[in-house]
Image 1 (cartoon, rainbow, N blue to C red):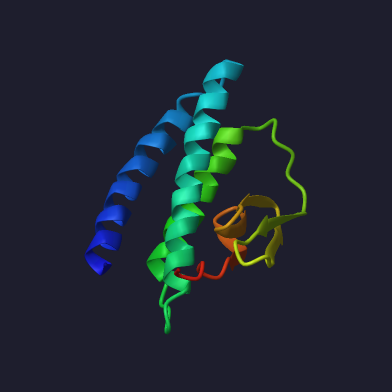
Image 2 (tube, rainbow, N blue to C red):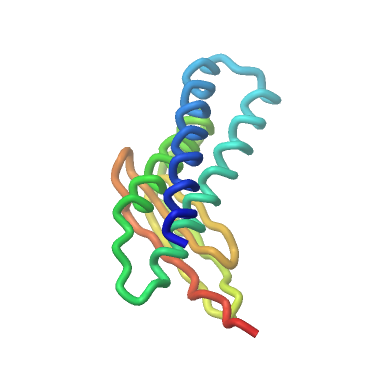
Length: 137
C-alpha cells in the first residue's frame, strides 16, 4: 500500500509540475482554456485531498508529504482560477458518507463530498478536514 502511495505521489508531482507550467503560460487565456485548466487543477486537488484523507485515517498518521502535495495542488488551483477569482475568507463544507460533515475556512478553499476539505492562504495550509473512512461492508 505504501509503495502505491509513493508511486501516486510521484505521478501526482509530475502532473502538478505540468499543470503549473500550463497555468503560468495562460495569463491571458480565453475563458474556455481557463475552464479546462481549472477543471484539471480541481482533479489534482481532489486526488491530493483523497491521498491526505487516506493517510489521515491510518492509526498513527504522519502525513507531511500528503500535506505538501495538498498545498501544492491548492496553490495551482488558486492560480488556475486566475486574478478574477475573489479572495476572501470563506467556509466550505463537505458531506461525508457516514452522514457527518467536515468544514474548513480560509482564503482559498476546496471541498469534495465523501473526501473532505482544505483551505490555503498563499503557500500555507490553513485548515484541512478529512471525512472518516467509509465502513467496510
